Amino acid sequence: MAASLRTAIDDARASAVPSVGTRPTVGVVFALGRIEARRMLRHPAFLLSIAFGLLLFRGAIGVGGSSRIELNVAWLAGGVSIGILIGALLTTNVATMRPRRDHLSELYGSLPAPAEARTAGVLAGLLLGLGGLAIIVAGASWLVLGGVDEIADHVDLFLVSQYVLSVLALGSVGVAVGRWIPSVLGGPLVVIAYVFSGLIWIVPWIAPTSTGIDVDWHLTYLVAVIAGCAALAFARDRRTPVRFLVVAAALGLAVLAGVQQTPPGGY
Image (tube, rainbow, N blue to C red; front, side, top):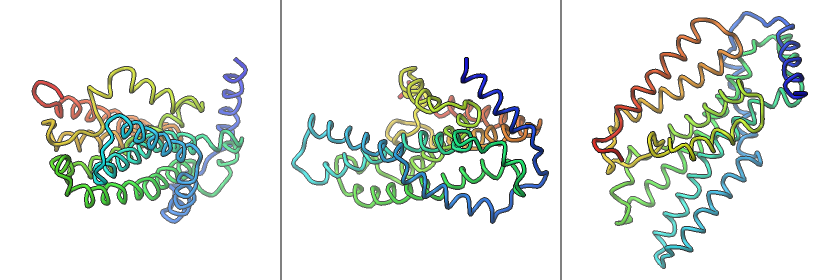
């Protein structure tokens, strides 16, 4: 009750300071993005997510351990990749709520940059930091693991593309959740709900071509999620009808693509 009252007071104080009517400039967004990228990659939530992914890798090696270095490298790449996916959601969620935790939200309205600059900076940090790291990891995995006979058929350009987009999509979800659910539990609850509700099997983020998934619709689904969640985050800064229309259109496209991407007979 006290937390809800405090949140309501913070929102009222933030809205009491008028925001400027201009749009954030590219220079401001890029500068904020570089700062956020460094913070995200160094944040304990991201580092712990990588450690969790490596722990899964260690468990997999213990269960089906192989003496072949190539297969062990494959498990290692999988563990790091899982850690980045989880870390993208949790780290962007925490970064989005940093002004609220530091009680600085009400001060942003008095700055020359508009309120959207903060949200745009976090999204730019996601693209520059976690997105860049995802490209490096996915590209290296493609080059190294493409020669492993057991998994060569699954490691292709489609897998690399959807992995990078999945990192950006989960990061965008973390930003949107952080803007609308001002709680550190928001990100973890999304992960738990997604896993235990079964959505992870109905609408997977990553699926190899061998599953029969429709490539074009799956990539469309990921791009639509990114656009919808980014628009939803910006709508929290300035609630205009156009922004909510963009949210509805993008998420509607995501639902359509999520249905159309399912292969005949399921995964």
